[in-house]
Image (tube, rainbow, N blue to C red; front, side):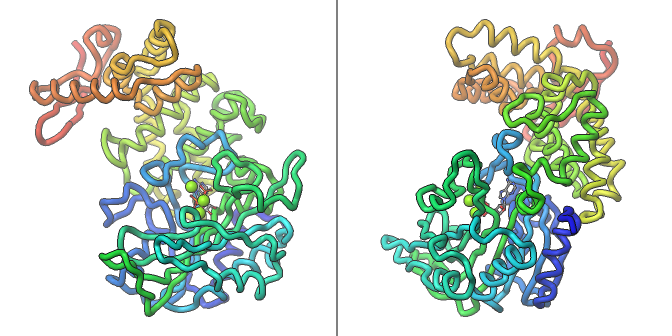
Length: 487
Ligand code: ATP
Ligand code: MG
Ligand code: MG
Ligand code: MG
């Protein structure tokens, strides 16, 4: 029996279905009715109303795999992508929920049973954290969860660690439902690693700690925080869990990187076919980083576009635009892809994920077309932007690129800020952000006062271009883009 992605996903759903949970579909990554949230970033998003008491469901237990994207705000994993082995922009969060039904004991015992009995993970490599309490905030330690771990499971008791509020207490907002959580981590070993020193290491919390990674978070919604900051026990206590599917799969397949699993391998094969390059799975190799970034970004793009987001210059759409531009630049500079190629990778993503998320199958052609159009439009200025960046970098004395000059890469060539910063980092340089911000302000003032159609490209750039170019019009109503013929 091999742990394929399809099987592990099904195992999870069925394990909880057998224990009375309703299998529910993933919510779209594009939150339909929550303007405060750019993308769905956790399984519990779709149940927020239930936890706040403003909505109900016809079931008390649910289980699903939720499409998540973490590229913004509190959860922004973009810069980790391709560099570490376990953070993606798009990932699946496996989750089980109790809405005022079962609580700590069932949740803990079930998660342990699934990981160690059903899937056979080595018990001596698992470590768990429980909430240590917080005196200042009047929060008690979660001795309940601690006792359950030590008496109702056969985990080595020395592997149950107390962590503080920053890691093991969850709050939805300033007020409302909150409670302690318990997290399960795995020790993946490594050169010279002592299996008994987990207690001395800030497990999983340190970015770039490749030895201990967090697998599963179990949140116990136990309190309701009042306006005055005090805590009241909730009459109906709930459970909200989230486990990284790609991570658990890597562990079960005996791989040291999520990218070595069958969720990513077919995508690498597709990138190899279109670029003629080979993926070597080397951690710090720039071409391999490019492979991983492109695979990751095409997954995120495919899921978001299939759910109805379109690339644009603001909000969700701009996140997509940034992802495509980032991936396209990696493709050209590190994989030698002279032509748009990302649209040719979409089919592989749909092959891997389409069974679990049928909307990706249904909208495959649409996603391919949007990707093609989007990458083609960036490719019109990409080459010249790179030349311009090169000039800038070479003219820079010291390590910091002038913010106003760097901003021109955005204004003229459409290079997003994070891309310019990334390119600077690749050369051991940085960008003066204050200068960038000032230039952006000045730029938007000019466009506002002019209030007429403006070219995205300068006249000088335009002279080299045949056919249509993108222009925009900006006024109080915002920015509208359209195409115009160059004559
Ligand atoms: P980490 O500390 O590793 O960044 P987290 O504490 O931010 O994870 P949670 O918000 O607790 O993550 O989400 C629940 C689970 O989702 C995590 O235990 C992890 O397995 C998984 N997860 C979180 N972020 C990512 C990501 N960017 N890519 C893949 N899996 C992730
Ligand atoms: Mg995180
Ligand atoms: Mg964490
Ligand atoms: Mg966590």
